Image 1: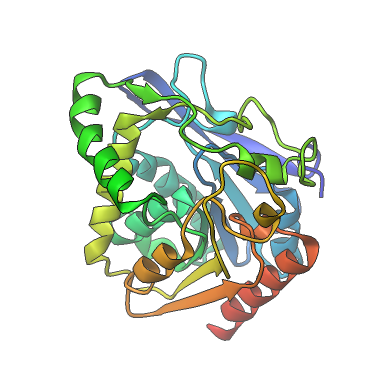
Image 2: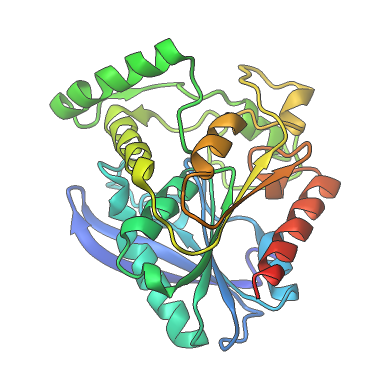
Length: 308
């Protein structure tokens, strides 16, 4: 499928916030039928929907496919906004609720909610506290961001300063907090095979705001009492390692998050959790090398089918 030819975008006007006008973008596959089971995909941090192949996989398996570019990300980013900025991850609940209602009205069925990385944290919280969580049939998480991948000392220091600094200076930030190694491992101009908009997903990332760090930590804490009552699939790589510069390891490990954190928190999300390890998976399992991502799709669809 071609991202520009085979998908349609719809702007969702949202309630203005502390930066002014706000919008989100709902992307729909042109191969959707409008009256069958559906999936809604939510991307991660410094990310947006460019995974045309994922839409094709779901359509082929009999699903209508939709994706969101959340507020201040990708197609939804406006000139007056700080990229990817939020004060609380529940800000994103508005567009998720609107999208779920629209998809449900078309399909008359509950929706599979699929999310990657920070999107996994947002949607796991949504399934605990979101207004339309009853419209979701199941939650599928691709390498969800359940804890900061830092040493214990660095994590404690970062969390300790994020609240007071973010409180005093709402746009206080850290430049270069994230390694470019992951983006380099997936973009076609470096070491990967994927073509994505470098204005929306820069190789060196966007600044990391202290307010965002505090919002993420709050989301982590809320999951300590998670009680998601629908089936949950938590997918993760077989290994992880922190790297500062690109190496071959980046093509077969999660170099963004720690898989032990994903397993530890993921297992406690609710009573119906399945953990699924994907051998040699990258951070975004569906951007891994061909045999690996094919295995990830195969195992995910098998799990979804077995729910019936």
